[in-house]
Amino acid sequence: MYAGALRDNAVERYAMFLTSLELTADVNECRLALTRAREHGLDVHKVAVVTAERTIDRAFELLPQMKGPLPSVIALQATPSDVELLLLRSIEWTTFEDGTHDTALEQATVILRYFLGAGRVSLAKNLVEMLPRELASIDQPEERATEYLHYRQFFAIWDSLDRVVECQSLKVSIMNRDTRAAWLSDYTGLIDHAYDAVVKLLTSDWMMPDETGDRHSYELTRVRQIYVPELILRLHVMLYASREYVPENLKRALELANIVADSRYKLYDDFLHLDGRRLGEYLDAVRRATIAGLEGGGSDPFKIILS
Image (cartoon, rainbow, N blue to C red; front, side):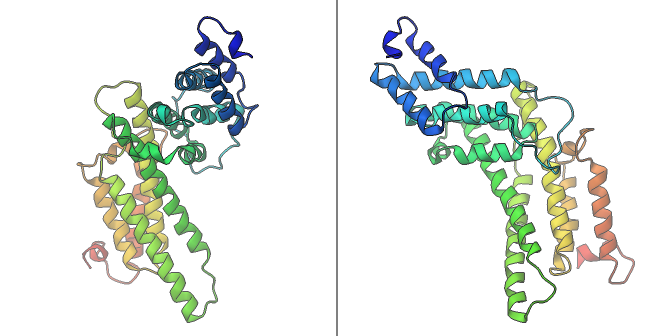
């Protein structure tokens, strides 16, 4: 009835109606409301795209701009605000139909840059989990497809680091031989997997901005400045903490410093933001690992690396 009463600019007006639903309708109700546009002769794909665009624009009008001090991602995450949830759910409109998946991918990368740049890791992860699997098969434009691949790579690593921490917490003081062997096997395997994945990310062009200096490049730079140091520090701490059970991981922790120092990967630059995890913090962690390497006797700080 509503759509039937529309005259000029029917797509825009129906999209405005859908936009007004905001958080009052769940995902199934939104899908149904969009489907009804087809029943009244409207182009559902156009309606979906316009609705998503209007919702995203509305959310960004209300959200703080992504600038200023870098956020902490190790602090307890605040409960999502209604505006953040509105931005998160805006992606639903372009995920219902295959014909709007290209637009969904474009919009998803914009939203992911915002959430990660604001330190809202959980919301960004929720968004990735909401997206259809088919988006991963979109390969054009290449820059956007690569950026989306990098997001999925990042969250796989984030989860792998969390699994190491969870496994470490399962260690208890009293274990029989078989239980301890099984735990150590799991623990070592999870560490190895996380180590390989993080090093692969660090030695690639993960989220590397181009030289244009535009907004997109600024946002990618901000994401790198937040998460590259965080991943390096988390990996170092993971290796250092496991040295009691996997002694060779102390050597790997010190070898990681060589990767950080390698100018090919430009990791050093990501530590230099005044509000981020500074290089001094990492170097202090490396110093403690070096001291730990001397605990077995001797005075050669390079012995652990050369062994």
